[in-house]
Structures are given as C-alpha cells and as structure tokens.
Length: 212
Image (cartoon, rainbow, N blue to C red; front, side):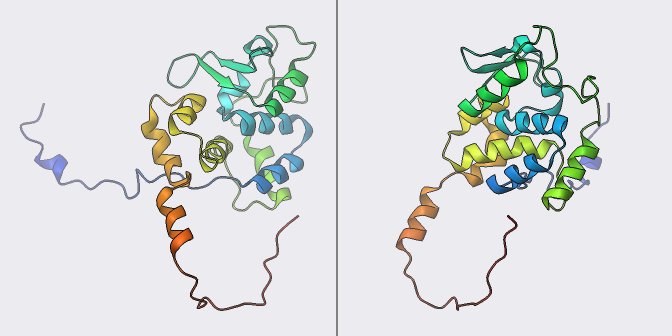
C-alpha cells in the first residue's frame, strides 16, 4: 500500500534480537532446584527438566498421554499445532509411572496441592522461591528448564535433528541457533589437544567455593 520501502530501510533492527539463549542450568543447579521446590511444584519441575516440555504442555497432560510400554509422552497440542511424541529416559519413565499410577485416563498428570490444575502464571512465585532457596541467581523463568533439557542433550553430542524432534521445533534452525554452540566441537577439541602448555597462566591459591 506504499510506493517504496524507503522508510522501512531507514529503520534499525533491535540489538541481539537473533542472539541465542545462553542461560541454562548445570546438572548441579538442576538437582538443587528440584530439592528446593515445594512438594507439588517439585514434580512439575522434574517433568520439565526430564522432557523439555513447555509449561502449558505439562499442564495439559492427561494420564492417557503417557505410554508406559513405549516410554513416551504424547503432546496433543503443541506450539507448532502438531502432535509430538516425547521420548522418556528411564528416569522419566519412573517419574510418569509414579504420577499416573491409579489415575483415570482423563485425569490431569500435574495438579496443585489443592487438586486444581496449574494455570497461567501459577508457576512464577514457587519458581522464584525455589531459586532463592537453591541459591540460583538471578532467578530463572520456567522456560529455562526447557532450555536446560536441550542444552544437556547438546553438550552430550546428541544430533541437532534429534533435539529438534524432542523439543518440537519445526526444523533444526531454531535448535542450532540455541544449542549448536554447546555441542562438542571438532575445532575446539583439536585446539585444546594440540596447543602447547606454556606455563604462563599464573598459579593462584584462591579456591573456588561451590554451594553443596
């Protein structure tokens, strides 16, 4: 509806709009966070870390969506509008077998202590409180749990295509943007193996303190 794109070409893009997400929890932080969660919220956090599912996807899960024999979760309504099958590890199978034991097929897998489902924004306060107790600063959003799952896979050499399928990305472009820099690298491995030790870094008697 305009004669030229001259005005559009004068605009500047937002800085770092395409920058990859670099925040994720280490294995130690994941354990600390789970231990710091309240009882009902703890299972929801466990589910996110072990599946990479979004908050809304976990809240919508029914008992019938868990297939104990195939060790998968069926996510019927995804962000991309397609059905997704999430592969569970043995630890994930143990979690969902416990959560669905004795439930009717149409019962929600994750509910709050009062029996009501997890709704919009219900996760924010308990997650902030758990981060404070676990010493995770700044406090993370629930979506970082999903990124932590993807990052853990990438750092262990899982192909980008497999991670994309597990997280429900339409293709590997989004996956590569966020996780490719974490994957084992032939270039990095070669440099670290071949560059000589020069002995010029300097010694220090300061011991890094790690929270147990």
